[in-house]
Length: 117
Image (cartoon, rainbow, N blue to C red; front, side, top):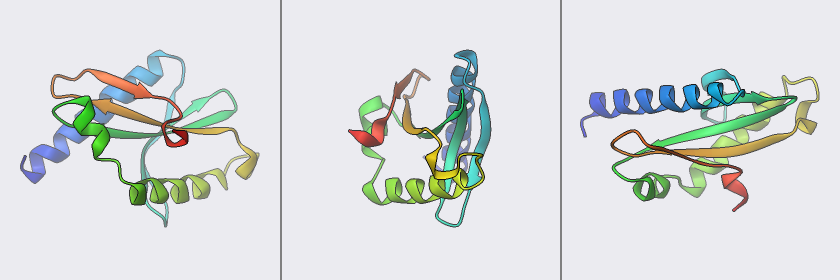
């Protein structure tokens, strides 16, 4: 996939996932949030808690899942810690890390609390 097409496919996947979270009552409060440690695709509110969402798009859900590396998870953790510094409860804010897998036809599979697995 060319760079431009890949970018637009990723952006479209993020939009679909943001819409899904919004419809479930967990509004997205930040898109492509960047800290010194890295970028987080989407951040949603769940009551007083925060959900950090990594969106992976590929031909199949399995291929999308394979694209998440340990190094990338470490960068997301670092960026999440930076984001939480601005929250009223700081690092004590309830948080979880979801991975949203989007296949070639736009089906979305949400893996809640994915980094704990």
